[in-house]
Image (cartoon, rainbow, N blue to C red; front, side, top):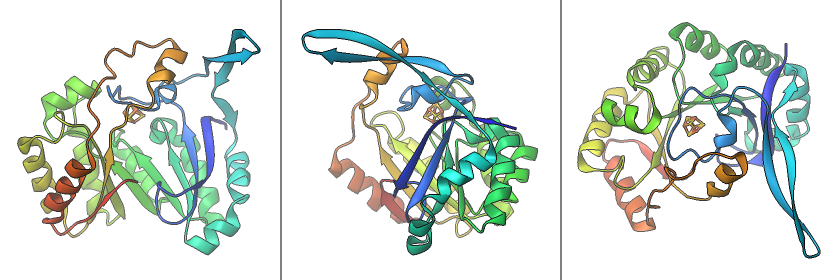
Length: 265
Ligand code: SF4
């Protein structure tokens, strides 16, 4: 069995505890308008064009995004950072895209993590069947669970799907006693209105103390060139970036729920 991977990054410090190797799996069932990894969304390898300059000549270089790897190949790549994992309390994080889109491959790779006592985290948008979520949860030490918008109509408008299954899965994982860190991208005017924050706080209070960590991820517009290089329309990818003051005030407000709120991953 092979998985489709679009990147592996060593020494990641924002994808769970300690120093980690993050494995990015291709394919995502959402289409978030602020997605900063548009190359992750398709379920097959795809070309991306990079402009190269040699002297006064500029030419296009085509690269393919997405390589097929076995679970063992992925683990052997992560093993290169084992010393850092052991020293820092780190491990491997599966991200994407949405890693549960390749749940068979993910399950087999997580099995190898368990056998090797390698700490595992799964960064998920939460949209998957409850059977898949439960199966993956058996072998996962930590979930990084994305909460994007509490209002379902807005969720559909900005991500293309309802948040109902996502929220059900979040409650399911919490009821299983799984360790969860919530992650929320902050997009000014879209998901930080008083109504959005009130609904979010209600959810946090409902889940507390089974869940008590929340990471706020400020939106940044750095990925625009990726849309162009993939030949995707980037006209929707235009949002305001939150100021440090906005982030601090949100952090202060959400901390009232008892959560450990952190800005950044
Ligand atoms: S869930 Fe993540 S990878 Fe998928 S579209 Fe949204 S931001 Fe992009």
